[in-house]
Amino acid sequence: MRIKRKAAVGMTMAFLGMSSLTAFAEDTIGSGISIEGISVEGMTFEEAQQAVKSKVQEMLNSTIEVQVGEDQITATAVDFGLQWKNRDVVQEAMKLGNSGNLIKRYKDERDLQRAPKEISLEFSANEEDVKAFIEGNCLQFEREAHEASITSDGAGGINMIPGESGQSVNVSASVDAVMNYISENWQGGGSVELAVQVEAPRGSAEDLETITDLLGTYTTYYGSTEGRNINVERGAELINGYIVWPGDSFSVCDHLVPFNAENGYELAGAYEEGRVVQEYGGGICQVSTTLYNALLRAEIEIDERHNHTMSVSYVPTSMDAAIAEGVMDLIFTNNKETPIFISGYAYGGELTFSVWGKETRPEDRYIDFYSETLSTIEAPSTVQLYARDDQPVGYFSQVQYAAAGSTAAMYKTVSYNGEMTTEQINTSTYNATASSYEVGTSGASQSLLNAVYSNDLASAQLAATGTAPAGTGTTTETNASADGENTGTSENTGTGENVSGENNGENGAADGTQTQQENTASYETDAAGGYYMDTDFGEVYVPGDAGENTNDSY
Image (tube, rainbow, N blue to C red):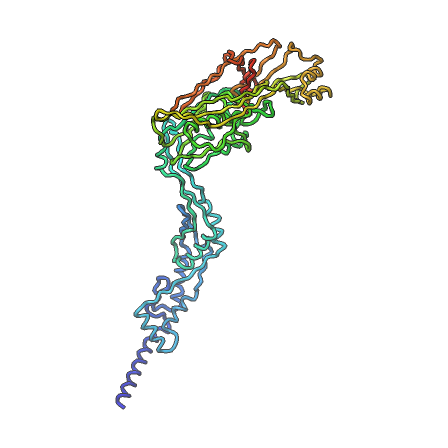
């Protein structure tokens, strides 16, 4: 009985102890409880509610740094449509130690004394608001990667410009990242990183530092109509300054088109169906040709090259490289283990391209190039007539002389260790061309039109003037050329006399350098009896008895 009495007394004392603990907690929050870092121990519901609301407002007033790759922008709670989710957080705190029977309350109270309780505030973002913020504010930081580049410093040296990384934002993944950050980790302020794909720039400073040696260079000369001169200079400008990385291919046409006024080109002579027409970009083939010869001397791999339909004046036969948008191109691939740099300039009638890189060829190895005519193609004896309805009857203008064609080949010689080897690089076929005239047909009779359509020059002149050509009349003869080096007009007096000019070319040495002498304008005859003359079309080569026309087709 004594033992039972003592037990009863002990239980009574424990009960009284629990009563004393829980009596305080029924009206206030128990000890050791915090809400989002705020101690609410001993606070009434109203006091805790006010403290929590102040904390929530403080968090909503804070800003969030949004990291977009290497950039960042600031967002607010409004931007993300933030909402406070667990608004019953104070009720949750009040229940701790104040719910259940006396034994549970006592246990909760003791647990809180040993391990304080931290209750977090919970927030959520509005998915549509987050997406709108990203699309409206963060996509501005998207950019393409820029490769390392080289520019001239204006004083004969070069500046190496490091590449810049590119980046693009994955909007869907970025929305998820923001939503998760707000719901799981946000405690006011802070920063969140968007899902950004970074594209590293191609080439390092070390790669650029390998570009120290002149691998090959070539020069041609120009000087014709203002339009053609502008086109040559514009073409050199568009090709200049490119770095071609190992294994990469380079399309010359892709870097020069479109051939229009908006891209800086002017009208100049170009061939179309055997006659000269004015087209934007006329003469641009001299740019591709000059570059082609520089690439050969640098021993860069040529993937695609075309000869002109007719031989040109500024390089020997089979050393040309014609281009035409969507039809012909000059394409090469960097077959070196290090990058190459293409330098081009055109000024004062001199067009030069140079290929720079890291020289790995032996110093005592020499290369040279030469061309050889394999066969000739007789010039047609027929005449081609073109109607000009914007010219009056009686207008006759010769726009093309009869010219023989040819087949030719270019060869490369290599001298090394006392031995010489020869390799054929290409073959070319240049078409023979008939004489062609433009005939005025404004107000023409049917007999004149029939003669033009039949390509009958004698009948056309008879129908237009009442006099058949007998070599005594005067006919305006314009032999314009798309290459612009050989363009002009001459007057045929029926005497058979021809005045001619000289065009000299000089091949350079085996060190990769080649230049060509500029055409003279002295009207001295060349070996074929031809000469050069300035006309409205540009500078024209007037052939002598040999009848060889060296006009460009573009």
